[in-house]
Length: 196
Image 1 (tube, rainbow, N blue to C red):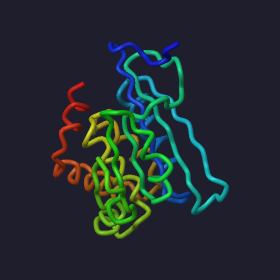
Image 2 (cartoon, one colour):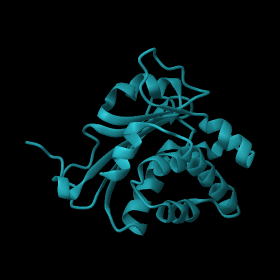
Image 3 (cartoon, rainbow, N blue to C red):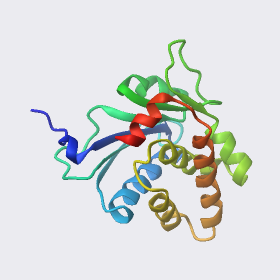
Image 4 (cartoon, rainbow, N blue to C red):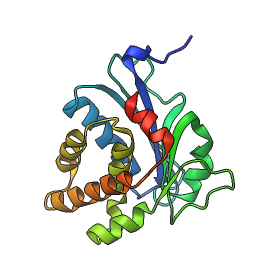
C-alpha cells in the first residue's frame, strides 16, 4: 500500500542531519512549526539521536503536506540536508531520484559522483552572526530559499518564536544569510521543486 499522499496533497519529505549539538533536531521542529502554525499546512516531525548525545549523528525528519498525512515518517526523502561527514555518509543515498541533497561545503567531503549543492553553511553562520551555533538557522534559510516548502514569512516567524530571548535578531540574520546563499544557486532540480 502506498502511504504517500495524492498529488493534489503534495507531500514533501525532508531529512535534516548532522552531529549532536548542531541543532538539526531544533531545525526540524522549527520547520514543522512554520508549516503547521504559520503556513496552515499539515506537518509531522520525528527525530533520532546517535548513541552519543553530542558529536554523534542526529537527524530530524519532517513531512509537510497540503492534505492529511497518513504516514508521519520520511519514506523517501525529497530533500536531505547534511551538516557533517557522518550525516552525509548515512543519509546521502536516501534522497529519492530527482531529490535535492544539500551539504556543508566545508564540513563534508563528497564522493566523486556527488550530485547536489554545496554551501559553506557553518562558515556563513560564523561570518554573519559571529556564532557557529546559528548554522542550523542558516540551513533553514538555504532549504526554504531553494524549495519554498514553506513561505519565508512563516519560517521567519517560527525561527523568531523559538529563538532564545535576546537572540531574535542574530537568528533573523542567519536566516537571511541562508536565503541569500540559496539565491546564488543555479541547479535545475531546485526549479522543479519550487514549481511543483
